[in-house]
Image 1 (cartoon, rainbow, N blue to C red):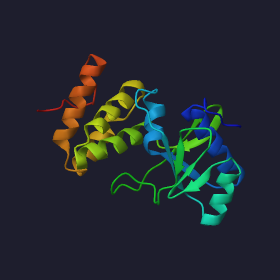
Image 2 (cartoon, helix red, strand yellow; image 1 turned 180 degrees about the vertical axis):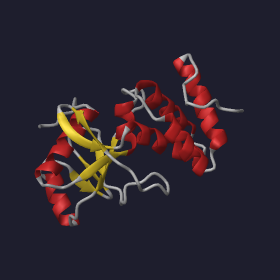
Image 3 (tube, rainbow, N blue to C red; image 1 turned 45 degrees about the horizontal axis):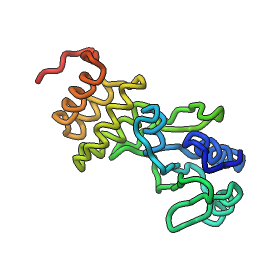
Image 4 (cartoon, rainbow, N blue to C red; image 1 turned 90 degrees about the vertical axis):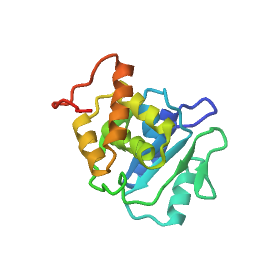
Length: 191
């Protein structure tokens, strides 16, 4: 797949994922790129984060990325014809202390890509809101939950473990307004 200045985030994800798969390197798409995909573009990221789940030396990774015209620039890889960049944050794959993350396989630009689930992508954004009061991350979590089916019960339970029940209720209130109705949780939320 040849990238151009008009390549979308999905096309860049597919190109990188395909190159990793050809080299038999297991990796999971995380972070802002997942949020962009799951929010159907309401949130825009120019960074693609892949957490590697296979052993690979920095030299091997550089060679693999250069084979698709991404060149190392500091801690990331940049392409001369696209504004998107790629990073490989250190593992393990996790959201805060939760490292029991089960990636899903999703189709992005006709390529099978291992990625965070929509629920875990939502939690990833909420983690930034919970710990750093990042309001943009809160809005992005709402955008993900509006466009994708997320497990609100699991998010609520995780939020309680993170001691962030009040912030979860704030998220839920904004989500309810965005959806125009009260989301069902199985149990009534007591305020």
